[in-house]
Image (cartoon, rainbow, N blue to C red):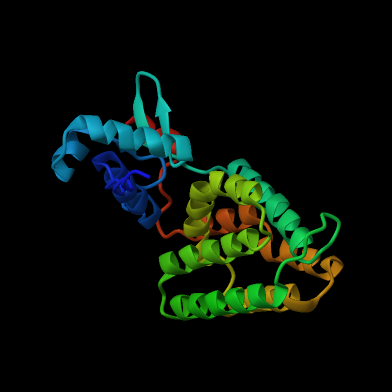
Length: 239
């Protein structure tokens, strides 16, 4: 057998994509904002080639939108977009729960171990929200639900869930500031973890859908409560 190949280091474009992704989720680049190649390349101290590769990666993830002859913009999720992301999430997580608890899709994983992992994540999320770290709360919310899907033991289900992961993160970060009270959010996650540990699927699934709620209504409330209403995405892009 030949010598093992060394692990490849992250390319510059991948590192830039991680930086831009983090900035978008943190709100450094707001919804509808145009990203100018020259300015970004200068601020990051890199050439435009790796930057273009990074931006294309984020376009594929759904965080950026490329408009011919106009440029690249941070996506501004509409109510329909939000509903569609949550529809896909709910469909995949329902399938994961059915498989995990041995329902219609067969399977049956270690429910007790999964419930314990979800409870630990819920505790971390609760601490983050109580400390006012909504960005961290959004990351942990995604970790909670990704852990649930992975517990089903289906590589393809997990892979499919990963395709909407970036848009899910963006949704959660945008919604977390007004996503019910922090106490309610913690109670919901603890409750769902408890049910996953022992309850029948007919009890778990309605709780899952109650937990998702109405993301479009939350988004509308956040926009109405904003102290200074920002111009919509099209107005920003036209500037």
